[in-house]
Image (cartoon, rainbow, N blue to C red; front, side, top):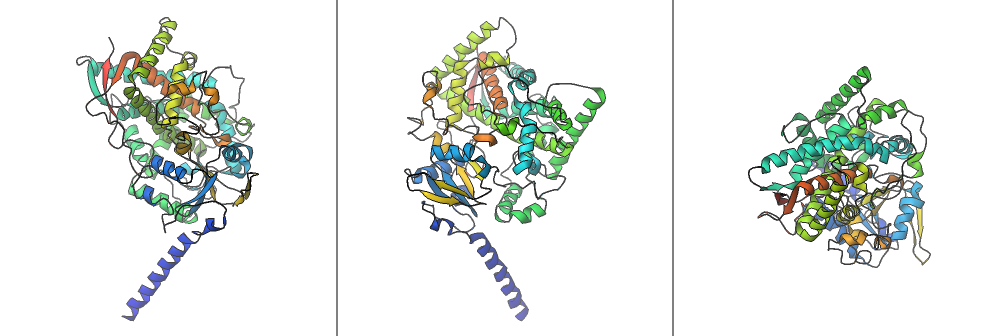
Length: 535
């Protein structure tokens, strides 16, 4: 009995210590002159999200609307104090002007400075890198995502899209129309594009529907798995412990599989002198330290395209290691696969809901096709489509793939709005920019739930506040792949609408219901539509 009592006392003491450790900062915002949300032990203010009672977008919008007249409010995301920034001027200061105070992302999936496991690839990717290591990698990779490099990769992307069109036309040959699940089709296409552009492989996920590349990628991208959820929560509650254990969001099996592909591809190209103008070629140049910024031809690249800062244009003499190169391919897969397929899926949903907008876009596509005089679509012709850009820009406003942005405060930052609000964002806390809330604020976008591409017409786009339109982030740490993503989404819509019309089917869900929990923007039961061949 005494032994049992001893063990019980030890267990209770350990649990009490863990509880104290996790809740130690719960009163953090009490001394700040800003409102804050109620905190629950272990979950902070995120209980409804982590317990899958709401979607990520709804969570951000509810939080944003809680105190509609304040510039900043406080929340706890599990154990981390987060300053939710609602004021456009302060967003710009944090994201751009005073960026040096907010260089890093919150280390959600591991920190490269502490995690040196050979399989911890996510921790070595551009997204997860911190401080000077991030600056060097951003400057190293930036020349790979310029307009001239997109032109070189455009043909590779076109080949993948044509394979999809051929597959759909073959299935529609006898029927004339059929019901399709849009996200499944676009996910397969996005995987083909990433395999070709980032890994140097021709996969064709339409013909070989269960190929090894697709299976491993799907497993790696299932972030809702209990194993991944456990890793995420361990990183949030005990980040140093998780880093010491070598935790990484990418499982070792997938790390080994994709690493071997890249190593084999690199060896073949270096041995045989193969040049394919894809991301592997560009990363090989970066590995040698020869990838540099070139003078770019002026071209309209789309309203949502973000511009590279001086950080990205800096000259870096340090060459990239093989492990770093492999890690960047992984982040291209994670970021480029789901983001693009999601953006295109929700855009198609809006075109199904708005046949008049779909028809207007189709007419522009016909005009562009006619202007090509039988030649293949080019990058510049695609970028010259004004209405296409308007439609894509509006879809990214309504359905931003990233509902919120985070920035880690790396040194104390004093907020002073000159109107009586003054406080310190302390080192180690985070700033949270509620993108979905900003994009749905009628103060910035009147009638925000209406899909209206005219917001981005030549006559109206000057009225859009660029400090609150943030589909690809803000400042030096914005999305490096915005050109690639926009190019792919536009090319997908161009070729699909040229050959098919999008119509409602019996299973088209309007309004769409989103999957609940801390997951990427995705539908609860898929996005179905009727795909009809054009005469």
